[in-house]
Image (cartoon, rainbow, N blue to C red; front, side, top):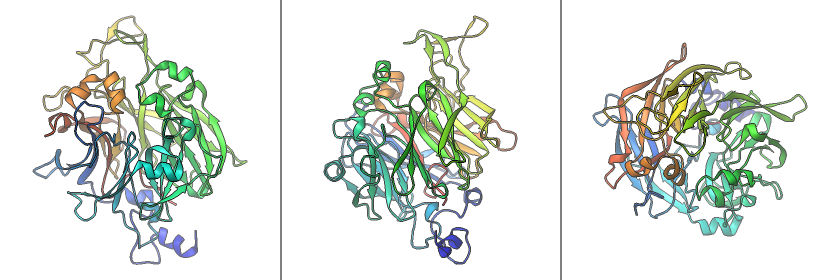
Length: 482
């Protein structure tokens, strides 16, 4: 980083900065969120409607608080919107010519990549352009695009989970320029990951780490435990040189790291450690750099399976499907999609996370469900789950977004339409919902906001599935500091 850029990235030497904030701690004092964009899905629900981007009002004093105030339908059917990212974020803070304007929305199934203009009218974003999957395939061989991240250069990097036929061997990273034209693949030839999913880079340590879900040919049909034993799902972290794209190391997490999905470095760019959430093994794995510049890993948190009756297996994993870290690196939050609880851990010592909050907001073992869990005392039990505005909470907590100040945690409950139908058929029939959890950032603790309930089951075109969330001003799962 040049001297001029370095000064600008610290908020010095210039009167106008680029997007985001100079540091994670300064971001915490940024403006309170007023809008959230939510990916809403009809793909896989049996409804012949396009997926859409919902704009939700989260300003408590507004007359439309906790309501969907705008819907931007995509122009095609069958996309399966999933994750999203910005064209520019705090990694470009030192460049006043950059602006956080475009939300990149890849479609996991169709392979289209949509670019949404959110700046012209944040309350009514519109489609700016899109890339057709045929062009991406022709130029890169990549399909099943998943997670975008902006780069300091103005380019955008998108992880892709397979080739045209859904083979994991075809996974890799798509590089787009600032006008969203295809530049090619990011990783060097012969340096593709074993499986693709999420990634995060930490420039000061010249490292990018990616995770591994599985082969699209397997997970798009629904979850089958046999596919795990047949090697169609991942258990690896891939360590790349940044920004060169050379695969330096593959960390095999073994049976304690099955299906590592989300990955987050600590926000402090000086820190050479982070976490990955491993869904099937229900563990949070910590990775860290050694003195010799190699990387190692260890299990930091483990969720024990529940012994259950009236379910497909005698034991039920928590299934950690999403997690995030507060901007001050004090708290880590994760969701157990099947058990139905949200957990808060203090990670001020990343080696020894301490549970500070837990809240059940759904799940397969809630009261009224046919599924019961067996306690250590030999008695059967179910979890108490509150009703919100008279509504029984459906499904289990899944995707998260945290307010910049760390005091409000937003939660949706759709994972992936095929898996939703398999594990929570009522989600597909009745639609998703969105909740807001109040966070005690002093002592730790979680409590549900009884006044916030966004019911995607009552959408004008029928029940929809709600997945990832983004604020117009950036957030702790998309902004990276350099």
